[in-house]
Image (tube, rainbow, N blue to C red; front, side, top):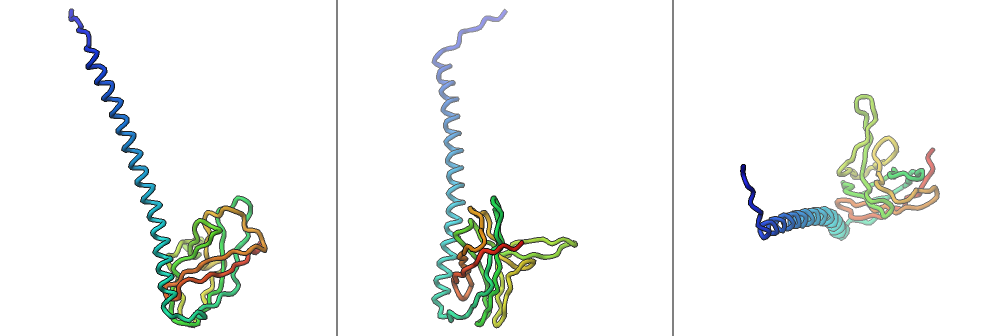
Length: 186
């Protein structure tokens, strides 16, 4: 029969402390990694917004005629309570040189994206566009069933009669603020 020796209490305490310290270090590392990822994500968004604004300021200072664009029939579709998205439409008349719509933004949505609707395999599908060309001497219609702006993650319902300012960012012409009216399109 084998006899057991009593375990040295000092060794036991050191092992328990080592386990506790090991877990504490692991938790600390996980917190650091999570904080670094959050900072990277938030920093990336801020950097993108800064680059867009800086680019737009420089583009707007390039001497392009302020009357290059006219915007007509600018409206946002009214939303039911709890909706998270809304579509916006406008006719963009370009009286100047070729340009490209790079981005749109509004304080009424977390994001505003340029979208298009296309038929695929007999189904209408909506997809995001990175940019939208606006050729010289033309009218680009952002309309239901085609190109449009999509408000993503809206904090409040769009009520008919309200006004929404949308900032459009063009590659050459810079920034243009356009007043959109909310309409009930049922």
